[in-house]
Length: 421
Image (cartoon, rainbow, N blue to C red; front, side, top):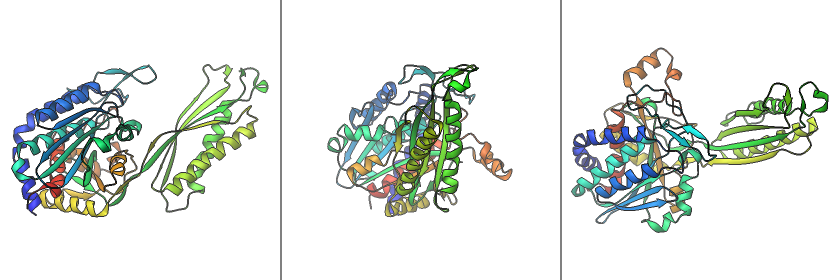
């Protein structure tokens, strides 16, 4: 493929960037910043894009950064990376492990860690941007490098769109993005159609009547009420969702009371649901509301529960034609066996809000971050579940070939449109 030859020419300078890129990655990892607080990170990103000759737009949707590199006639391709970290205390033991603490949106001090690999996403895209800048004879068109804040809250992409992204930059012909996952480093994985699930978080406040622990007859115990709601919710997927449809309903937080001999007057549940279908999503949300209200009434609650929907993520539904084109380019460039179908992932993303705002097709793929020998040994022993996954305090993608693969994937995919015949 002619586009692959262009990609090979662009990637010919990759080895020369290796030390710079690894140092950049380590710096991001050492200095994580939480969602909507990516000030230092975005400053580094903007500076690096400027050094690579991009027209740079800062503070888009808060701390978002967009770089535009025009290089003659041809298609326009948007590549995206996310920037935010998580409130997690790192336990990887890496020499560049984060010791950072941050102030969250509630004003509390919390540890911070790049526990989802966004540091590798940024380093890979900055590497790809520099390679495209240095090998302009190998391609033609316009490259957009978009660095998004607040992916972990599900509102970062929408924030950039609401801040005028569509009128700020050229309209792309296609949008592309990737995520490091628990697969062997050196592999990439595509999937046509629904790839990442929709996600919604729900906060339910249940109301009771407080009392002394020795006088339960005077109370309406929210701990008992919350327990009944949790038990009832466990039957929704098993007994209400049609077999064969995918759905996850997880109660991740139950908060009630402050002391053993005090019956509180309220309880708070926090739930998370994952679906690939809007009708199933609506069915789960309706069931949650029905159960919370019914159990509250059954317990004699003084008022109906408060139900709040937050941190909602759209479905990531990969365009079949774009995915086929990217997959073919990957298969032409990477070694045999390196390109896989990762299948559907139950994680969620807000990347698709960007191409949806432009009305353009997109695809989103994964690349591996686990030492291949470690992965093979764990797989042979049936212990893959023991490898620390994204959001774990022990999540630690190996430095290489994770970065070189992630960088190459971006270059190869973009070259499927920008490469010269």
